[in-house]
Image (cartoon, rainbow, N blue to C red):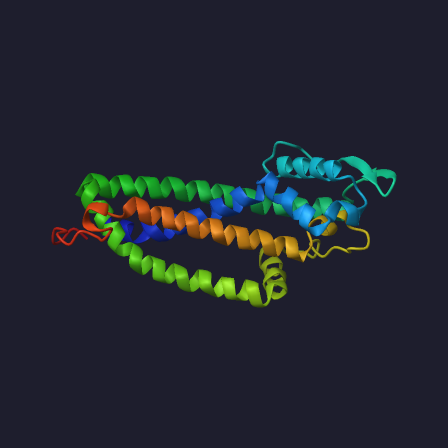
Amino acid sequence: MKKLIYNLILPCTFIAILLWSVIGVSQNRSFFDKQYQLNGTAEHIGMRHQDLMSVTDNLLSYMVRQRPDLEMQYGVKGEIREIFDQREKLHMVDVLNLYMGVIYVAAGLTVAVAAGAAYVAKKDGIKTARSILNKKYVWAAIGLAVVAGTFGIVIVTNFQWFWTNFHLVFFTNDLWILDPRVSIMINMFPLNFFYAICERILIVFVLGCGIVKLLLADFKNGGKPRRNIPQGVI
């Protein structure tokens, strides 16, 4: 039981960090602001930038259930109109359900990791448990590097293929296929926007995993795991 917990703590930690990275970046208003300015989004759609940011605020509130719907009207190319059509709103219901699932899984894994860490710390002592996890981190990080590196290569070399297949896996309908000639949503979030957000998530994820390594490292021992781990501990 204890050995299993030791083996699961770091993989669960990495998955939790990835999910929290997704949540954190996707709720970062300044990231959206920067991307809109880089892409000239407001001008392309025909909106004022401040109105586009208001739409974004409403959208981000909707994604954490602080807003019941996406009914909103703003000026677009000189006309006051409903920003999102019915197809876009239905798609966002699917996105909301997926997003809430990410939040629930991230929270559950965080609780599980905390409980597992408390369990092994109680059984073996904090210093020993940390040293064991520090030792296991090397192998966990190798697996992590392979997975993250593979995704990174795919994202850099063929992001459209990656993004299309992401939708095919996680959505059971074709509501995510939007017409850029009529859809404000697809013009707010073109492919290069999602490329940038995936890149940012990957960076935050790697930094988060690095912080875990720092928390586990024994700096009195040069950052290396202790070699005097009692026999039979794991």
